[in-house]
Length: 341
Length: 268
Image 1 (cartoon, chains in turn purple, cyan):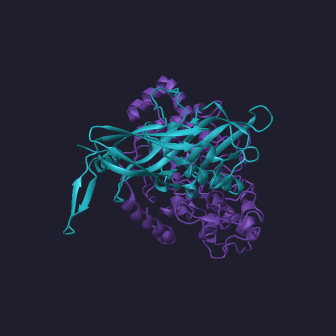
Image 2: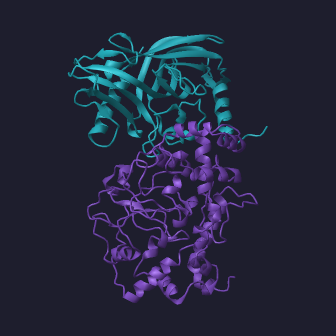
């Protein structure tokens, strides 16, 4: 299994570090968690002390995640914008909520969100439990007060029984947020051809994909200077120069600091081939367009990252890079029946 | 006894509250500490008044500038309720409480009926002042409102007192309608103040009161509603500046003026 470790030395060293850190900081998992299958090269996610991993919470959270009872007009669930077959993202630039296309940001993939300490494109929400109140209540999305959600659930004998079984009490905001977050933490994606290659299966990537990986990690392209680690994200906020004059102030919406204008979370690239359109506003429709954006060194926003120095890429190199990016698609994940209603 | 992770801090806090310690210095400068027993009740009412009479939601009032105001919702958080003794020593008796002037019972009978009256368990003693802050302090502001039991003032079940993870708790919610000259109450008045920079201490409110073991002491704190629009922070005309959600820019400045007026509007 590990006969090709040398080729994957860098990622594995990083993962090893994460594992060590993870073990030190994590709530250790019980021995048997059929819902939470971690690839051997992934660390344990960190669970909040008030929401340790419990199978029963996952099952209830999954039911809620796919239930349109959470939206004002009962027309859409969380899964409307976070579709399992699209790695829990959407296929449109800006998703519509119950009031139509009133939002302004692209629906992010939820793959491996268990490891995410920055939630939303502007990265402010500190936990899944706290974050979900926003899409639930925002008039751009499901537009239903959590207290109304709870009142509805109490009217449903099945939910009342389930909450009693899982939390020992009637439906309440605590149970709703803890169970949905529990389900979200089981959305682990780490079985792409790239993962198999990292774990030693030499033939999991073909020659073009391997050349693309080398380009991805090269100093010339510097993709991995931000899209690093097992999540392909450094977990930070960066200004990638998407627009010379951004309409969306990004991180500055939260901090009100003009030095944060245009800063957005570095997204994971896992399953990137199925999560387009790209960028916080879905303004780039193809991976080719994304590569072209970075090749030209961005659109020169005054605060854009100095890492965006631009590069030249031959057609063959571009094809190799695209082939590598497509090797990050985890078909086991996007077809996982355990992640369907 | 087995503590769950959630219950343990609550028990810890309760223990601290029940067995707080008072210390005094004797002639030899030795500090002697004896545990206080919190067996007194202090009933605090925060009495809002307009034009000299008690505020009633739904009633119409004429403000000093001639505009007419009808309040439909008025509630706010007070934090760090602290009793002060003549020697300057202070005892914090409550971390946060929600004052609500809507006295109609909640539609869900399982939820508490927040009002403008609170009965707190406090130590017996002679006090000379009470002090508190307006808003929710940063450490609590950053907490998850869904994690609180429904009888806690910071619970999301209190309704309409939480924006989102980014802006967190609303410190003050004042909503109503105004007649600014049209002859009808057709102007919406909405002041939702909050965010950490608008957390403010209220000046210490002086006045002697004594709490006794096993007894209940009543303490009334006044709040002059007209001062919210005309005070040390500045004047707010509900004709020209009727709303603020504390967003950045001019609306934040308006919320700041409102807040600075409000912290000076409390008295005894």
